[in-house]
Amino acid sequence: MKLLEGKTAIITGASRGIGRGIAQVYAQHGCDLALTYSSSVEAAKALEEELQPLGVQVKSYQSNAADFEQAQTLVDHVLADFGKIDIVINNAGITKDNLLMRMTEEDFDAVVEINLKSVFNMTKAVQRTFLKQRHGSLIHMSSVVGVKGNAGQANYAASKAGIIGFSKSIALELGSRNIRSNVIAPGFIETEMTAKLPEDVVQGWRNGIPLKRGGQPEDVANACVFLGSDLSSYVTGQVLNVDGGMLT
Image (cartoon, rainbow, N blue to C red; front, side):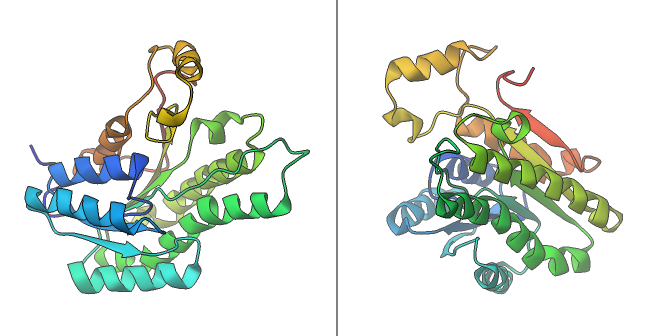
């Protein structure tokens, strides 16, 4: 059963990792996709080619979600190319980890700009479209770190916690117009980034998770399918932890 047939989604930061996994699962569910990337041109084009045989419209756009004007321009281009937008998945993000003692102002600002301000930029850019349609689903990617904090990640935790406060406020503002705003907080998800880590380090993390394994990008993608589809039509202002029980 294709739960997203006839819908169009924007996924930011879609060329790798969790964003790529969401794009793959969304395409399998019949969703047309506007995918953004910041610099990975080859990876974005390869993903386009991989998904097009599934019978969905797919187009990638080079766009920096942390730039207010670029977010506005992106939405204009997607509307011109697809005719509508039903779902926005704010997935773009970076880390610049360090203890506060060693963290520079530049590293703090960069993480907040890309992780948090991008969510404001994209939500602001799509708001008028959603209001006109009287429907839309906003899905913002936070983290377990945004819920519980983590030593050495004050900038990342602050940005991801900010996403939760922002999303809940937007849910209250736009709910009367049938616009929903929800957050997904992934735990330890195994991607190409974690594959570069020593196996004993990764295994140590797995051992600390109640389900005793890391998550896969499709685990997060499946939660995005639920929040983007009509199955969740009465769900807004929520944080869905996809973490194998880490926050239990």
